Length: 247
Ligand SMILES: [Zn+2]
Image 1 (cartoon, protein in one colour):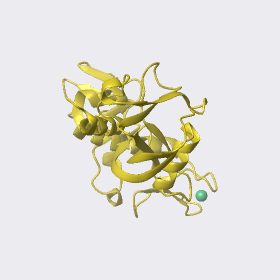
Image 2 (spheres, rainbow, N blue to C red):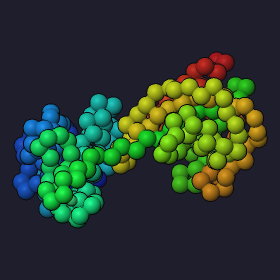
Image 3 (spheres, helix red, strand yellow):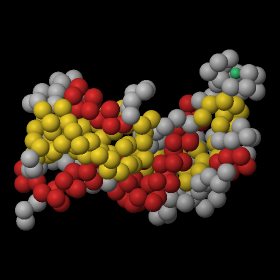
């Protein structure tokens, strides 16, 4: 089973599947009621659990090591674990919650309120203008790493509306031809990334100075340093490069 300690996953003798149920566990998916269905076996252990031959890996660094499939399993397990860890009391009456026997929820034995795992939708968009791609530097990213724009979907919005709003807010331009590209589960902690492409319509780049301190139009030949190859942002950038490379 996948074994987490804090936000780290155990790599034990070259495998992410720990062969037995560790003791003691803080939480274990094997203890869930049948209503939770077939879940990926996972557990969360406390600080004292330290098997020899084990190494604890940060979930973000995992992707490059283990590939999409293991990352998807670990990401799904991590999202459930994160939710259970942070949702312990009823939001209506503060009674401790229990695992529901009706569905994949946490229910309140006192007032009947049920909590379900949260998933936060966000957009990420590759904007093009005459063979150039819009890339920006986010103040929270490492220096000189540029990427495409992203932002959270707000209540009442379609993801396409979010694309138009975020691009306008962050760099001050209008876009058109907003098209869905693909998606990615992004378990940090529970985001669903929806990828889009779009084309410039009007305006000149004015980075907002709050989230973005620099933005520009780049050709495949003039690309700055880019994000890691496993993210959907990089897939969108690579998609642009493939269509516009002259070599
Ligand atoms: Zn309650």
